[in-house]
Length: 84
Image (cartoon, rainbow, N blue to C red):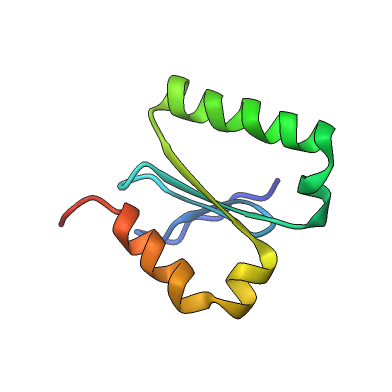
């Protein structure tokens, strides 16, 4: 997994996955492979770990939602952010 930091910009955790430290928010964008039962179990365990061990909020979107329902996805992300 690559990690990139640019000042106050979010860290990139991996392909299509984003993390904002200040907001303690993880945004996961899932492709078809995440429909596989083994991958779904891994995702669930990882989400649980992030919530319980790191106190991060995790929200997930399917790729097609990000591509074709971008405004709704952005609205959900904004709603998940803490107040300024």
